[in-house]
Amino acid sequence: MAQQNYTNRMGKLANTNNTSIYTVPDQKMAIVNSARFANTDASNATTVTVQLLDSDDTAFTLLQEVSIAASTEANMLSRPIFLDEKEEIKIEASASNDIEYIFSIAEVDQGVNNKYLNKMHDHDSTSKITLYTVPDDRTALILNFTSANYSASTPTGAGVFANAAGTEFNIDSGTMAAKTTYSHMVRTHILQEKETIKFTAGTADQVNTFVSVMEMSKSGGSTA
Image 1 (tube, rainbow, N blue to C red):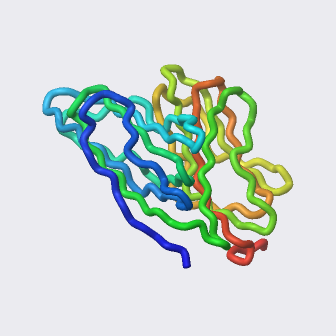
Image 2: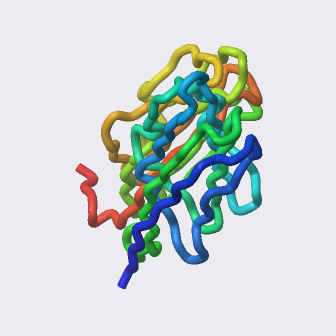
């Protein structure tokens, strides 16, 4: 039987180092349900950067220098985001002893029929990249589709869903403001076998994308 464990990570950033606060345990995956920050400095704004690291320690920037005003709080995730086994969360603040954080996390086993996947990509070219393709005999629930411009520039970005025949349907497109993260979904979307998610960054080495997927056997969905 699949086991679930509900946990959190809370603390205060005592310095401006890039600090690891959570690593997914072996043989688990994690659903990060919320990330809340509070700036306890009564006078000055402080910025926060959040990175997700894969099992090879490659860093993907989810939030880049997001400003939190003095004596205010901010919720940083509009949708849950998934992490795979051994993947990691790191956070960094621009000032010491100002930022408090709490992350709420569900750790679950990978099931036989239902499988949780995290797809992170650093767009090092302007090519259209396939971020995820639904395997044969599977249905996918896309719970999160996020892009982050971690640069000081303003590239364009375009996300699409494509059906099994390759016909593309626009999800979100336009200019990406500097150091801004975009959630491209308000609700969960369903994709069926051979359907894909694609993204094009208008400038190389400025954009990361994140896709959180729950795959299930085709019997859990419909092909009609």
